[in-house]
Image (tube, rainbow, N blue to C red):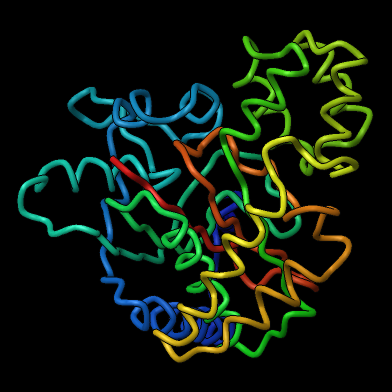
Length: 311
């Protein structure tokens, strides 16, 4: 009797109906990206592990990457993210690429994690990258690209929220808790909150040296129970004023997504500013990162990724 050989654990199989859905999402991602002048690009699926050891966190290299030796003895990995490849490719043509650089891509990535509902070891990600700009206008533009995509696929402001992150804000708040020397560990702790039970998460925090009082402070920060010192009315108005400009320039109805989806919903706002989110903060270089956005209902694919980078 022949042994049945299944697919690799965590790998994706796309039957025609799922391939049609994937292509539909891709078509709308491309339309949203191109509407704002972004050019499509891609990097290799295979990279040397040295690239990520230099550019990414230790956890990704030692625990999350698929690593194997090639026949020449070099350690190769299936790409777990795209930013290091992007940095290398831009650096290789540093003097030839006009600024700002607007690139986008959509493709598969792999991380050696425990497969779970809505998250497998192989996942697809939409990357939208704007390089060479250090301005809140760039942050608003990236959020506008995402809002346009949601509009194209038929979602409404009531079904989507856009959260803004600020690395300097999180640095300050974590330092105020007496955890300045453990910032990387704390950011990793925050990223794992949705992946662990509350009991396991509390124990994980204790194991890394976070006291009960400090853990309470982290939970308070994440819950948005007080207005962080670095965020206030000026911050909110700064973004509020940019959206009419983008709406006029690109002829897309961005305003409802921003005002209804971010500013007016009590659960997404603080009394004097936008609600911060700490998700992914350990991967932010600087500035305010428009993070994506929560689906209501089961995920259709991995969340998209938007980033602003200023080399």
